[in-house]
Amino acid sequence: MKKLLVASLGLMLFSCGSPDTEVAEQKADTLAVDSAAIKADEEKEFKLHMIVANIPAPSHEIIAIGKAGYNYDGSLVLDKAKAGTYPTEFKKGVTYGMYSADLAYAASFNKSNDLLALFAATRKAAESANVVKIFDDVTKNAHFEEFQSNPDSLSAILERVYVTTESFLESDKHMDIATRVLVGAWVEGQYLLLSSIDGQKSKKDLDLKTKVWEAKIHLNNINELLKEYPEDQDLVPIATMLADYMKDYEGVSAADQFTKEKISKMLADIKTIRTKLAE
Image 1: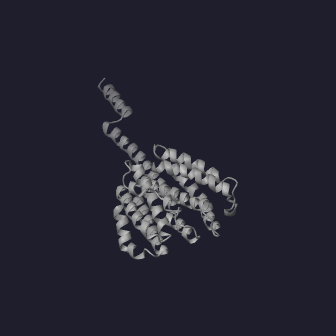
Image 2: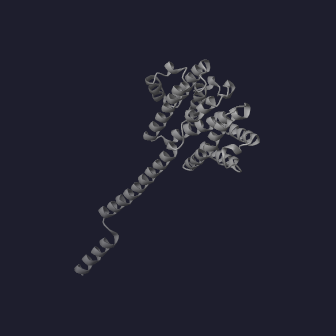
Image 3: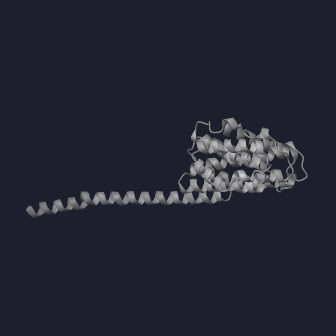
C-alpha cells in the first residue's frame, strides 16, 4: 500500500510538472516572444531606414526652381508667424519638415529678407519638434550667415541639416518623428515645384517636370513607409490621401508628358494635402 501511494504521488508530480519547471517554461516562452518582437522591430527599422535613405532632402529638389529661371514667390511659403505654435506632436513634426522646404526655397533664390525670416521660423519649428540642437550645431558650424549670397552653399548646408536630423531621429529610435518630418518636407517640396510650373513660364520647365516625375518613385517609397503606421490616427488619413495622389501619375510615362492640365490637377491635389498638414 505504501509503495502504491509513493508511485501514485510520483506519477502526479511527473504529469503536472514541478513549480520550478513551470516557471522555467514560462520564462522560455516569454524569451521566445521577446526575441521575435525584437527581430520584428529590427527588421522594421532596417526597412524604414532604407526607405528614408532613398528619399532626397527637400533642398536637393527645390534648388532646381531657382536654377530653372523661375521667380521667387513669397506667398507660397507657410505663415512664418505660425512657426512653433502647432499644438500636437504630429503637427510639430510635419510643419518642421515644411518650413525646412520653405527655407530651401528661399535659399535657392538668394532672397535675403525672406531668407532670414524663414531661417528664424524654421528654427522655431525645430525647437518645437525637439531637434533644435541639431539645427543650431549644423548651421553654426557651417557658418550659415556667411553664405547668404550663395544658393548652392546654402542648399548644401540645409541638406546637411535635414540628413543629420533624420539620422539622429533614426538612431534615437524616433522613426515616427522622422517620418513626420519627411512627409511634411516632401509634400511642401512638391507644392513649391508644382506651383512654380503652374504659375510661371520658363524655358527650362522640363527641369522641374523631371523633378516631379522622379518624385513618383519617392512617393511610392513614402507610401510603403506609411504602411508601417496603421494605428497612427494622424498619419492614416495622410497615407490615404498620398496613396490617392499616386493616381495623378497615371497616363504619364515621361517628364515631357506633363500637360498644363495635369500639372494643375496635381497642384490642386497636393495643395489639399498640404492644407491638411498645416491647418
